[in-house]
Image (tube, rainbow, N blue to C red; front, side, top):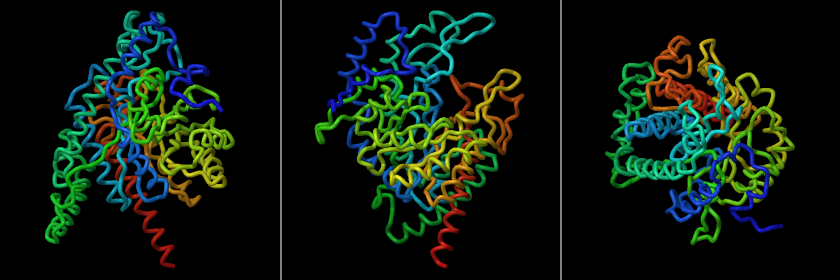
Length: 458
């Protein structure tokens, strides 16, 4: 076998990586510059996330992964990052309370810029231009200059990712994540919603428990976990030139780590067994994930597992299922049974967003809330029936008060979409919809917990 190196992928077919840069020498120069930049994350952090995901694979924890569809240069602002952080914190509190298990929090953040597109071109009013592929490749403005791939955008993406990580680390460890602040994490625009009322009820119960623990001598000062949290970063490892530039040998272990994020995933469009993306991910030591869509066959999945996780290491591989609300029962059981029969150790996660996108008569892409929740429920029911742990969820969401997904308790109607439709790519859940989903999932997890306790007692 040829020894793996971060550049091996260049000899293989690579889908959805732009090749139409006007100056490929400039692209190579910028990638070389990035290879000398400091790491964004550290190998020890990636190893710790792998351990946390190992606990998810064993059914001891739950994975919450969420964030923007595609990060934006234009909307980069500390308030937006703060709002995303506290929505994730709210969801994690609700899920922890319902599941009775720790929640591993992973953001689609600090690197989630590029997006594979179903069409290489976009047509408006008879004008055809290259598709927008994410801010680290080209611009969203519909003009010829904006849509030309520009390698300098990689440098800006790196800088924004570094700033984002700096702020997230401050939020995580600087006191904002202290459980004594849980009542203060409510966003202003949902302060009067039913979800916020339910959230405050959970917070009251947690606060009562914390007062009891404090009386017993367990405080944030004696137990640091109560005053800080772990938040990890992830993105789709699409632009392999950038990922190669950020991949370094860890001085502690002597192994290769991609230091652009703690976790990288392979998209449903780029998971070819003999392709560049699978080869690249097979060689890094980070925990990795792979999207599994309706075209995934059990035999192909097993071969991909062998390639990506040959040691069958717990926490190494997460399977993110994205079938569509009406296709889960058709596809997931066969994949789950194949993995179980082969003795593969994986984290099962549900992406209920990408299989439930539709276009309205007015031309807006949206995702109905009931279909999103329907896919999550079917995913959890199928795995529970197979005695497997439905270990996580993967959402495209924002802390902003957007109107992009229709439905929810505070119902966003089709005619509301135009009022606050801000996404640069695909529709996202707003904070209230995300919190509502967290409560619905929490109730499902709680019912499983009660059923399992009754079964063990009988």
